[in-house]
Each structure stands twice: as C-alpha cells, then as structure tokens.
Length: 492
Ligand code: GLY
Image (cartoon, rainbow, N blue to C red; front, side):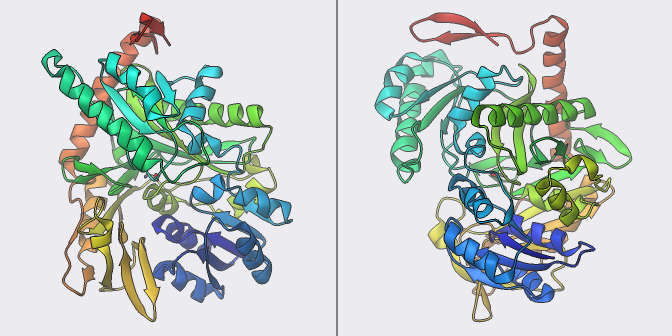
C-alpha cells in the first residue's frame, strides 16, 4: 500500500501518524511546500519520498503520485481543493481523498454556502448579504445599525472576520465608521489576491454561543461524524486578542464532555447528531446542485445559538487544524480502511470508531504571530525529549536545522480521562519546545482548563434554554431582521 499525502502542516502530521498506524503498513510519501520535520520522519520510517512544490500544482502532484505508485492521494489542506487538484488526480486515473472543485465551493465561498443553505432551507442558517465590491456594500453599512459579523466571502485562512457589537445608540456613528473601515479592509486587503471568486464581502447577523467543529468522513452516500471538537481561536487566555488559525482544541467523546465519566458537556448528544445531520444536508445539497460526488472530509464549523441551536458558521472541505490533532488521535479504526471505503463508495461497510477519551491540543507560536508573521519566522527550533505527542506545524527542516515558518510551530497533544487532565499533559509538552536563538514563544494555558470549560458549558446552557423555548413555541429559527429599504422582515 502506497499513499501520497499532500500538505505540510500540523493537520497533515496528524493524518500521517494515523495512516502510519494502519495494519496495512503503508509506505507514506508527502508532497508539500516545505519539509515538515514530523511528516519527514514518518516518510523516512515508512520508506516513502518527500516532494517539494506548490500544493496547488496538480501536474507535479500527479507526477509524484505516479513516481511512488500511489494507491491513492490524500489531500490535507483546502487550497488544492479550490484549485481542482482532486479532480485532475482522479482524471489521471489515481484515486483521491479530497473534495472536488465544485463541492469544495461549500468552503471556498461563504456566499455560495449561505445561498445553498437558504435555497434548500437547511436548519441553522443565518441572515446574510453578499457584496462584490466595497462600494456596493457602503450604502448598506451606512443605513444598517445592528450587530454584525463582517467576513471575507472567500476562505482566506480565517483572517479578516470581525464581529461588531452595535448596542449603544450613542455610539452608532462610531460603529458605522468601524464597520466601513473593516469592510474596506476585507475587500481591498484580505481579498486582493483572490480573483477566483465573484463575491468578496459578507455581512451576517451576529449570533452568540459556544462554537464547535463537526468533521465528517463522506463518500457522497454515507456521512460519518467524528467527535465534536472545539477550536480556541483567540490568541490569548480568556479568549482575548486577535483571532488566529486556532490556538488549540479540545474534544471528549462525541459531544465535548468534561470527561469520560463526567457528563457535563458543551453540547448534548442530540445537538451533536443534529449538527451532523446539517453537514449531511449540506453535502446532499451541494451534490444535487453540482452533480459532483463528494469524496473526503466535510466539516461544519458550528455554533450553538439561541436562534437555531446548532447553526452553521462556515463549512470546511477538509479536516480543521488543530482539530485534526483531536480526531486523528482518538481514531480507533484503521484510517486506510476508511479511505478505501470512501474511494470505493462503501463507507457504510466500515465500522468507524473513536476512543472515548479526552484530547487537548495546544499550539505553541513564536511571538509575532498572528499579525507580524515576518517576526515569527526563521527562528531555529529544538524539541527536547522524545517529541511523543508533539505535532510539527509551521516548521521547516533544511540541512538538519528546523526553523519556524511564521505561524503555529508545534501542536502539543495531551490525552486523558477528562479534559483538565489532557490539558495538563499538553501543557507539560509545551515545555519541550524552545527557540534556540532566544526568541520567545507563547501559547494558551487555559485550553481545556476547568475554568474555561465551566464558562463554555454555561454558555451552551444559556443558548440551549432559549432555543429550546423557541422550539416549544414553534419559533425555532424565526426572527425579525431590520433590512434597509424594507424595514422589519420576518426571516427563518
Ligand atoms: N481551525 C480552523 C481551521 O481549520 O480553519
């Protein structure tokens, strides 16, 4: 069995380790734009090859797959999906785990994702407005006085999303100014390099509640959910600071329990099932609209809101990062067997199981991340100790030296019977990482801690009380939105 893995981040290191555990003893090769030391180790141990190049260059990836005689290619990140790499690989006669270009639209364009959700009346849909230019959005922002989320309409690595609360009437002019400035920045800065999409800016109603990611394997017929994971986006403890690609993540059982024998949970099992149902409905809808079969991973980045209960914030066409560290660690079933089930469209015949365990992932970042990545880049890294449980992320190995790539350098994975225990183990692992030129690192200590869990369980409970009340009254998802030019409109 030979596999070519595409991508070189922490997520792909987690996937490589899960593939390596397979009883089929696969020879794992990797194609990435830098040599991730962790993946390189797996490649060497299993007798594979490492290829360097652009992960969007389908020609080079196909040549690499042919060279190693790959039975299938596993695409880790989203950009190759957006560039149609899985489609070209399949056309060349090689099997591929990865969302094709048309179905990956679910992630690539938040505007298309919302259009689809409203077209098929899929639960958990937020009110939104999409714009091609800043100028088009301007009159709307001028008139609209509500709390909103401003988002780049294209997936751009989680950058640029801003929630602006607009409750105080006396601050409305100032809030309008902030909204205008941020909308302009989204279109003119964050979206400037993307000419592969029509709509650039999304304005969405603001909602609140605990967030979580439900990642699913799918062969287009069967959708198999993995344990729900909560990513911690903000840079600093207490959910403060800028949003990042994810500073760490927690999971326990299927529904984010406190511990294996402690049923306090951020979401209920029913909410977990409903979330997976929503992901399935999204997959069905995109397949129906495009005629393309979905082979790979689809994930709902969800929020438990007071309006809907499980609500879609965005979709992923791949595993999340750092969420992959959680689910790949807990995965009990042979990942190669799951991949074969997907490829042969018989995923329903594979019994996919996860360990009932708590997993906490903590990302360690060089100072400078996330907004001054140039400062965070190029520092030599040493990993002291065995490195067991440490995923290499944004790190590059050249000439035997490992240097930081400017983002999260490693992801430390702790496990246990309860999240605080897993968090403490991950915390211990963070001590093994050192930048040898003395440049400082930072990470979040609070991920999976009792205090942070308590806050999240309480937030979930507050949102649940309200959406359950609405549900009892037949009002789930129904609300009045003030739309410029139209006045108050009932949506839902
Ligand atoms: N955890 C955020 C992402 O994977 O995009």
